[in-house]
Length: 568
Image (cartoon, rainbow, N blue to C red; front, top):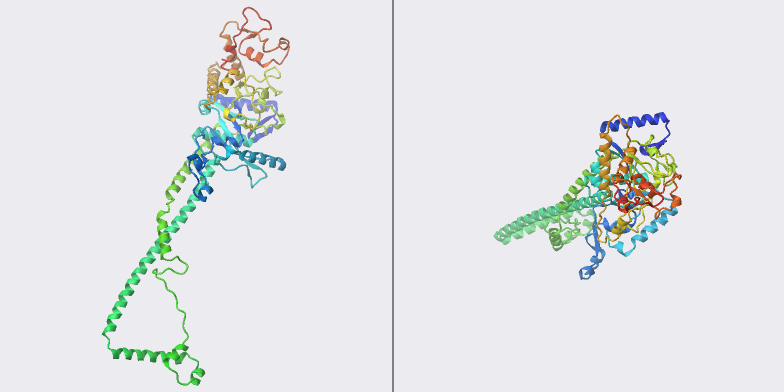
């Protein structure tokens, strides 16, 4: 059986498996590359979903007036808490948003657990969106996972990606593996925003676009009001001029002319009232005065025409208009901030495209998760599931050797032991994440006790782990040795790694070791197929393990911790 792209497991014949292996080896040889299978958790990173880790990714921290020696001055200050820059934020702590499909009962328990974590006092200080969120399109939760990248990860991948074809084999789910792969590529291309950050930036830009539209509409309205007011002032000026001209003419008229004009108007009013009144009522009423006739004339409703000098009924008065105008002067133009956010979003989206392209180039379809090989059982990783012929050109990087030793089809010849392809690395635990629940499986055993004590004593938060730099050097030498060997000599990655390990202690003449203080003598029986790990390490590094003490069989303990290819 072999697992291919998308987590599909196929059953192929032995001849077909050899053909696939030969075609793959030919392509790798033409490109002068080897294969490298990477584990994720505690090998390249340390992941948790504990909300307390948000203090390392939040941009801002909520502060109170008491922190600055003052007091809240108004209700508005209480409604909108003040924030300041978060000094604990780190560039090497990233986030991914991962859907979690759980049964309804477990889902509710999980939500309550996370909400309880968010209610803790130390978490309230950090301004981040509350999670978990309900996925509207599926019966799942959207959870934020916090991932601390191992130091020198960027340098490690940059050095080996030209000489190794990279694959991922993780105990996490496929969704987790895909999200972590793209997140690592964001880190490599220099992107500082993850998926959640880009979505937040898009939301801010939409809000600012809407604010700009409101501002532009407000400015256009103000311009219309100014034009209308100018037009009204011109009309008032013309009206005043016309009134002044009428008064001059009036003073030139004689009294007789005024009385004649008034009589003419009275006659016109009388004629109009006779035409409009009801005939029967007018005849029966007898003689009536012109004033009585005018009272019977139906009056038309006057229209209120506004030219800007007086505001219409639905508009504010002149004083109110002045306040709006004054307020518009104080209103900030959001166009500059909108343009700044647009530039940031354009840059972020360009880097996101680069990250996606790099993810396809670096990992391709070579991602295998525990959900793809569930038939193997828990805590089992099989190299033949990825490389049907045993992976003669593949190396493995993992912090756990037991998961590989649990496979039934290893080519080492000793059941219960991991394949020789494995490069065992020290499990990575970031001290600030200690006490937080791991996302997937537990880490492997840490054999460097002295390093642990040193790390526990490091209280300033510095991360001095250099494991990936040492591993990159081993892989470089492995690649050089593989392609520098004569083509006539049969070679494989397991054989080369085995010989490189033996060179560690064979530089010292006739190294012998007695491990009775670590392994009881009765458990050091050579007839046993499964060797204790410490015995296996010593023999693989080139030492001869003896059951009894002799004059020249003392192995300094220091040498066991200086292996360049063994357990570091």
